[in-house]
Length: 311
Image 1 (cartoon, rainbow, N blue to C red):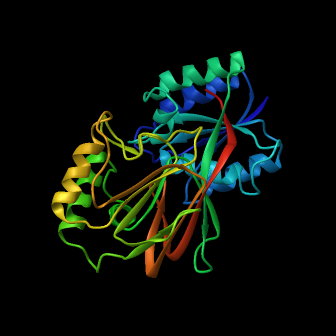
Image 2 (spheres, one colour):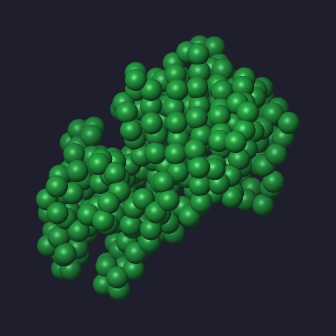
């Protein structure tokens, strides 16, 4: 088996020693090349090159941003029988995709799971989300666990501007509260269209989930669409208002896996094939916690069984 290990050395929980242990362990089972990323988009380019070179496996060692880039590189020309299998060894602060797959958070433990999966031939097909942006966007983009337009994307943009600080759940929480308390522009007005339904207008934010939990606040899982998984379609969680009572109500519900997510200002759907979000003015879009750009129309599509993952 030919494999490529893509490592983000700047990720929160990656270390040179951990990288060396992982590389040594993998090299005992596969013919291995190692790529260390040093610029935004490097992991995507490395994964795309691995496809072109006929690799069988690409392992992403880093945070969710690294995993997202690797996935987009693997699927740059769409899913096919020639697409290499994906392996994940978490090295970030949240590691949502890895945790949703049931992988350990500790890189050494996750490496052990990956090696055992390779030895025993264990693999799983997972569905992914695909973003198709308007002409002012960046074309097609894949996401593994979530995407959003509005408040959450604004938070991602603010965190991006604080690159000198260590990314952490606490930083995201502080930025989210600050962005909510002091919005820098008028809240966007969004319209959501779902196949077979009338357009839903005058929304203030829209989250699209590909699995559950949607994200984590440290050790606490945040559940917006508990009916979502890698084996179903997409989930929509949208709010008509961002007034404090509404936000607090749904935040409390999201922190409880058993609470029913409901409310008069909530629009929620589970297991849908596609969701289109539009706005009269450009609105920020994020995918898996990475800022994509400002867009006026985005279509989110569920692609079942898009990628094979070693678990």
